[in-house]
Length: 101
Image (tube, rainbow, N blue to C red):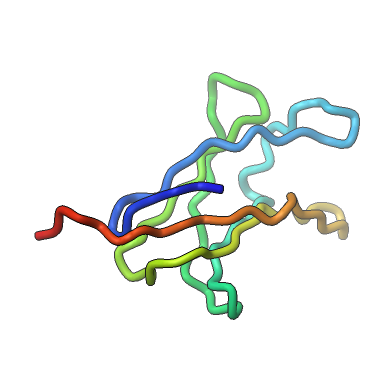
C-alpha cells in the first residue's frame, strides 16, 4: 500500500521483471498504469518513465489534487505483441492534508 496526502504528488519506483526474473527494459512506451476508486472511477493515468541508471526500474507519477480521500486501486499493465499482462493490484491510500493553502 502507498500512503499519500491529498494534493501531494504521487511518485514511486517499480522494478519490473519478466517471467524469468530478468529486468524489463525499454518498455515505457508499452506500459500503462491507472488509479481508480473502489467503484472503478478513473482518477489518473500515471506518467511512466524509465530510470536510465537501473535496468527494469520505472518511475510512476500523478497529481492527486482532484482525488478524493480514501483507499484507491492501482496496477501496472504491459501490452506488447498482442499479449496483455498486469501486476498485482495494490492500494493507494489518500489521507486528508493538514497543511493547506
